[in-house]
Image 1 (cartoon, rainbow, N blue to C red):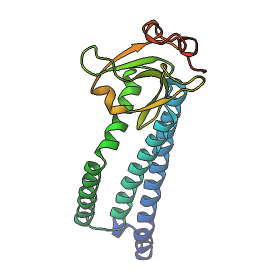
Image 2 (image 1 turned 30 degrees about the vertical axis):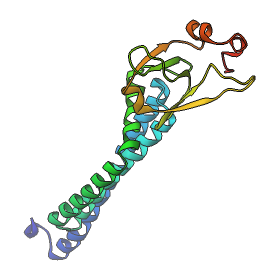
Image 3 (image 1 turned 180 degrees about the vertical axis):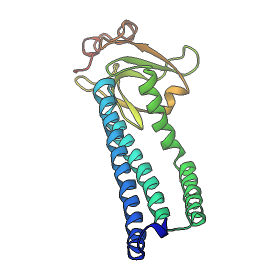
Image 4 (image 1 turned 135 degrees about the vertical axis):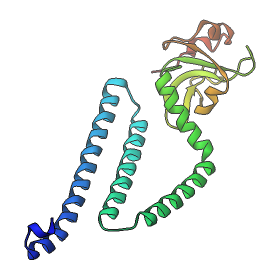
Length: 206
């Protein structure tokens, strides 16, 4: 098409077209990021997505969109595809090493996503983690669930007016059997097993 336009305009187009393509890439990345944020906001409002998980989804999506936009912009600027692929593989290798180094943390984050999607228990439910068969283990009322651990409030506390909490790694719930009682009421087996002086204060304040 160079013979269809004057020579002075051809040089101008060679400069303007890459800039226009870069602006289109940036606009598409911005629109995609707004779409993802809208979807995450809808999950928070309609599906009860925890705020911590919503923050992680926003940051991960923003990072992926920014990386893709950067690669496309560099390609429009004339950077060699071989150079981009070498940089990408180097970054992936570093990411793989970091992934295995932080496996315990990442496994808890992944399990928190599974807990949210499968709903084995909810906040204010009473749960008990069974060690072997029916052997009792950790138990308590679910107070909070974040990306790393679940906070349980123990029922059978020893001191009057005091209560202790347990912070259980989320991955533990997929390694043991979990018994669940729905609702905030203290399960009757726990009341029956509690000493007489502790039954009245078994249910913690909400």
